[in-house]
Length: 299
Image (cartoon, rainbow, N blue to C red; front, side):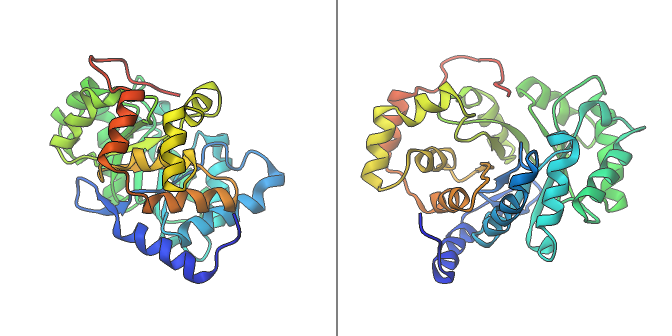
């Protein structure tokens, strides 16, 4: 894919700026953001990864998701460097380890993330997954960070339906604005109960690995004859089709990772793709949704 000129960048950005998802606190964020798992691990790729993140922001993918776990802070440090001069254009998300989510550690973890990210606040702070710290204690820690201005809002990640029901029954548990979980065409388990439950509460899903993790599962998706036929008919790649499918409803946020400018450009362009009812029907037949409750898929 050839490098885009400024007019092309602005055209893609305009579409992504228009198509946003409303968090449960009323904030609007891009349907397509940028994930950073494994970004920052290879020093030889650092400059290219920084350029890629900055181009993604230019293309309207201004939500950037990272975590203290990713490279034990290396991802956050790279993101911090990438955001120099453009921090206010970005909706910045990071995640706290479960063992750091208690009242005795969460403030320090947040400060460490802020230092690596070279910023004074996070737009969204997530519990990375549920651990041994009581949810009530995690909530209190998050609320203290909000009061201190260190984070603007909080959410969770990798919580299944029963966990979410427990969360919102707790004091201030309804302040949770999103739940970040694995979701893609080959992993649709959340459609049985978690996704409908969150929709009832206008709490969007944030989908990680929206084009599946590298490996046999991803190959099975992108090499599937139905996926390839629909992609060819639209003049797009199978990966772009998977992204377009993930955000088809308008209330799911997808955070694909890209480590090259060509890759992030293709991701951003997926925001313009409109799948037909017939496309979705064919994909449903090839990759059926769940007919019963299945355990939450996690990687």
